[in-house]
Amino acid sequence: MAIRQSEPLVGRAAELAEFSTEEFGRRVLAETDRFRVVIAALEDGQEIPRHAPPLDMVMTIVEGIGQVMAGDQVHAVRAGDVVIVPAGQTRGLRAIGGRLVTVNVVSPPPGPGDHAGSATAWPVDEEVPDVGALILEEHAGLFPHLDHLGSLASDATTLGEGELRTRLREVLAFLRDDLLPHAREEEVSVYPAAEKVLRAVGGATRTMSIDHRFVGQMVGELSALGEGLLSSANKERIRRLLYGLQAVLQVHFTKENEVYVPLLNRLSPSERHQLHDRLSGGDGGDQNHHKES
Image 1: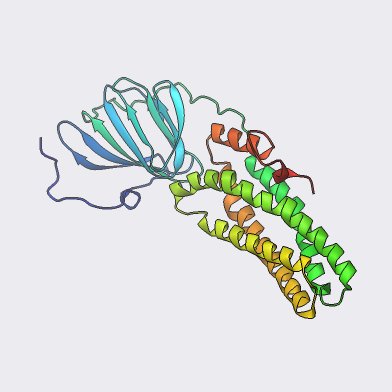
Image 2: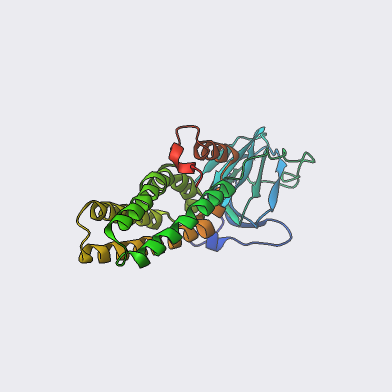
């Protein structure tokens, strides 16, 4: 019953995987009379056809995002998930949005014909909302306000006190009523959703939260300056804060648009529905988060 290999094996599954452009890749890591351990490697869009062999299987998703057929149900899976399918139950796997690597333990080892695929097609994916488009539309409404920050910054040291206070109130109204609620909502809904995908492909949203913290501090300082004595020194500080906010927010929105937003449409259908409902104003979302600008 010993494992049929002479040396121990230690390594990262994703690096041990063997991909193929013709069909999904497979590499046997270990085998006994009772079980076989296999790394399955799927390119984007590849699948292990649905089949129902008389074998027990434990599958661990180690990299990527996909869908697994377990019994009569299709489940969204990502790195870190475990799937157990008893003998005789239907199983299948497909990669979505990139490479997918799994470690499968099958007992007993499969024989000829055990991997014969079923002619039954995968269920058609349900239509789900485009969460990314919703966020990009909101960012498009916020971007013009960043120009107002730069414009006021350039004029801050030359404006009279009355006009400076008026324009500063307008800018602060945007920052307090639109921007900060936007940031708070992203912290509780968008970033946790993106993090689920990022964990599967390697990454984090912590840097984006740091941006939000600095923006909040800068808005607080700007607010305090706007209520105090508008001396020459304070006007200069206001100018620098406005320029700083403009730069930080332009970079922040660009990072979200180009890096994080595209990941959201790789969430499972139910997760996308929940996030879309919240960002649209339902399900407890901040009503100010999607105010028309």
